[in-house]
Image 1: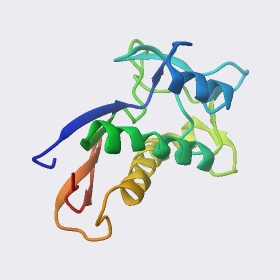
Image 2: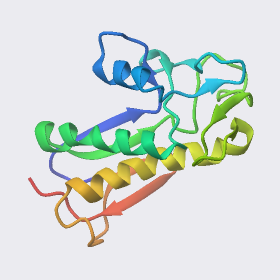
Image 3: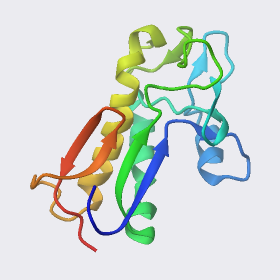
Image 4: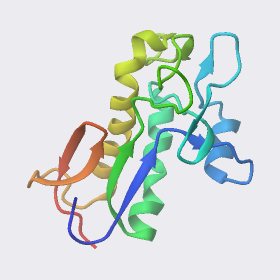
Length: 161
């Protein structure tokens, strides 16, 4: 990661907490993945019990990328690790979403069985969009990683203060 500035580890799940503005907004806008029978996909990851944004939906990716503005501009985050976006879920046998979770899949609804490998990539693409919009010189690749998905590093120009 870049040598200067704060780094942040972001989880794919958002803690279920009606006092947390990010959770509340996603809930109000119906941005979370749902099970085939209707309820939101709920699972435990590092923050505790979470719902999971459907990063396969363009509107959700745009919303997620907009959340980076405060991290980058106000807090000074220079590096982000998109973690647990396989998506990982603790305390279940296969450690990921069950196949009956539904995804928007860019307007082509499907099961998690089809979207499993796309989910984390789309979370990372939302972070990449934020980088492109918020970090000066984003178009120039100078081998300074700023965004890291679980198994993928997205390169960017060095973030400037």
